Amino acid sequence: MNNIAVLGTASDVGKSIVATALCRIFSNAGIDVVPFKAQNMSNNSGVTLQGDEMGRAQIVQAQAARVAPHADMNPVLLKPNTDTGAQVVLQGKVCSDRTAREYFGDTTRWASAAFESLDRLAGLHEMIVIEGAGSCAEMNLYDRDFVNFRTARKAGASVILVADIDRGGVFAQVAGTLAVIPPEDRALVKGVVVNRFRGDKSLFEDGVTMLESMTGVPVLGVIPYFRGFSIDAEDAVPLESLVDPKHMPSPDRIGIAAIYFPHISNFTDLSPLEQERSVELHWLHHPKPLDGYRALVLPGSKNVRGDLEWLFSMGWRDHIEAFRQSGGVILGICGGYQMLGESIEDPYGVEGDPGISRALGMLPVETVLEREKRLSNSRGTLAGTAVAVSGYEIHMGRSSGCGERWSTLIDVSHRNNLPDADADGMVSGDGRVMGSYFHGFFDERGVREWFLRMLDSRYRPSVAEAGREGDVFDRLAAHFEANLDIDALFRIAGIERENS
Image 1 (cartoon, rainbow, N blue to C red):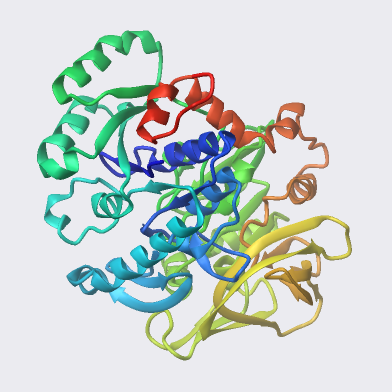
Image 2 (cartoon, helix red, strand yellow):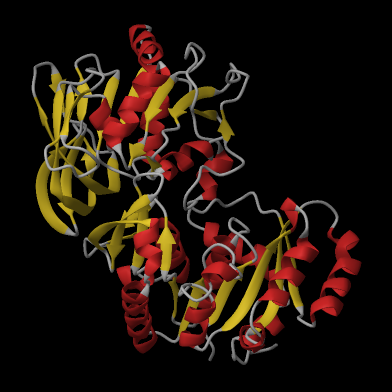
């Protein structure tokens, strides 16, 4: 049985989606398969049951493979905290801060840790589906790139090259990539997947023939754009999201605004709301009046004091205060929660120069950034209710109440699968401003219904929405199986299919 490496002609061609689909396809075939990505650069991370941090994309892929997420599936995670620097998370734990020049100057340490994790996975599982990073043909970085072909060689993997036809230039993407990489790596490429096709697929039949003739590599499939599934994006709000739209939300939908910070993290916390048909979510970078929205969300940030300063300098404060006075609901998640408080202190220079920043003052909470990061897979209930909440905590800050007339948001029952009778978050006296450290706050349907009914008492989930959950990976796998040469895929993987 061969491992499979899903490499791309560029960033954001859909490698994560393809790898997720393959994980479920192979799992459905009874294979013990796991995902792996040697290095992620992303502020969208999650926490394993062991209390380790890893990229959200590999967490989703592990779910598709029906295995528990483990930090070995994403041993190197870079979390950008400035324009030129990032926090390095190594095998689930914070290692250090590095500038891009420092990190890429010598990748020996990072590659060694990544391959150590790869070897552990190979010793425990039948197959590994590897996801590459960016373009696999960045020739100026080729000798330092341990995420793409070097990982494929180490794993003895067959490579599937993914190209995005939606962005145009698919022939140049594929032929150009294969033309510039070394012959020994080109020989590893066993198939091409043309992703994100829109329209009548039969019109591209001659294109498939031309691609195969130009490259000598078979096209395994042309995958139509799939709208029924959204994997957590790595490092940017997805292109299909509405950012700074000129229009206001439709009056027959629940309008929610979310501020797009320069150092935004875990924006996928809001993905479940985007999937609700009754919701219209707008990401806002530039300030504007919020009169047409029911709620405002301040998401996480990898540089909280820096993004708070940006918020004030852009002129957001007046709009947020006006929205508060009008009775709008405001929710802060992690860094956004800290910004809603009275102050944020960074005595050790964790995110920049040491100092203290005055915050928005909408919740009576003070935050101090500490050297040790809390990493916790957490669950509980909304305070005073039976509504289940699950999520993960990833934060340097410790927040404490400093006034009266507030209550907690979540009664915490477990952290990292151990009992923990604790509380999380804060709710203002009038119940209109709230904050929590729980990333993934909206993942539970009960929480979404509670929140959306708070915004509009008429809200009811549609039958389609209620039926979408639970089978999403099988639907994704079925979509790919209908558009891939599955027999060829299994041959590449060295698997003899029954009844094939």
